[in-house]
Length: 493
Image: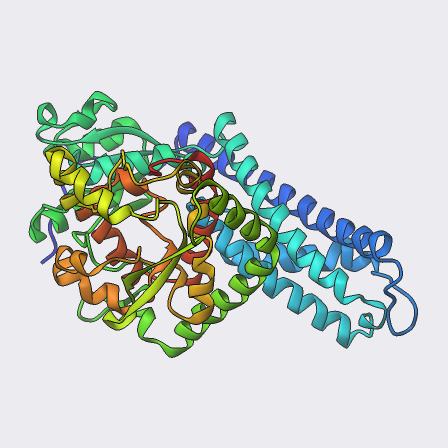
């Protein structure tokens, strides 16, 4: 037997508020559609000028370079927009990083399909490979930037805002509210909370408490909100089922936040068994798949080799500056724990005086507070061993550039857990097995989340989360975030 719903009258007519909401949704979708079209055409035109004006001496087989206007203004945009519509980018409210990931994939698929169409229609004879590459990269860049700013414009104008009611006001609801505030492009506006213990919940200071669980139907009817999020993972199974069946007749969407905190969610697949009325959640271990390890290694190797070649003059200048400030070796190799628990020499630019170990022991012997800080984090905010040039290198993270050679050697990765020393193994506890699965990284989740300002237990949780939720796209996002963190110098010492 299913739970019975309460006898609250269901309005069969569409209200003016609902019509207004639908109109706003259609207008927002149209604006996104139009901006996407403009960016796709702009990318094709920019790629054409890039090929024709900047590289005019590179000619095709027939000595001609031409792109049919039909492809520029109709076929290529139609392919892109069809993929966008199929992926739900005109109706789904996705985090910006997820949207960019989809745009990247669509840019690849759309360009491959466009080239195939040109080939089979004999239009590819006058097509330039430089144009194809430029059109792909510019299309991805234009569309990603356009989405970012267009979404924010739509939110400010009220066209992309969607009111929601959150059932629950505990820690889970706080996490949701925090994410919605940090991701304004999602467009969610919390109209209020439904909670039995409002007086005990800090979140009610920011959003109104509309009633308790027993009043949820009346709250929904009076608010006219059609999207509900149940963020009360502590509810018992029968209570949750009863709540869902009571709510569902009055709303369009009910989202349930299950009690799965700590479970790897990034690569989860959902399957349903209708006859058994149950849901199966499949969690894949991406790092156990050979092709993913090959993808990650290839990405690391290519980027590191290109990076070393590009910044070799900077590396030379830093090495000279270190020697001039404190004569001695420019590089320092410290034994760290790598994949499978094997040790390796982790390279860095030397940022300390040559007799650093002696100075450290003397300093800790006469400073109990420093001893406690060292025993806790293996770091010191006011480290007497650091030279003036070393202080600059650490704050800018330039001291870690030689680790690119560790990546090339296969001892490290561009992204991964922070390399640890022997004494830190015990601090990882049961999570050390996660650490051993991958190579430690030059940057990672911890490095973009506050670095030395983050306590050690949180750092361990971050490393574990990264390993269990790995994807190549996460690596790319973390690398981009690292640039912002380094420039902001947050948590660096």
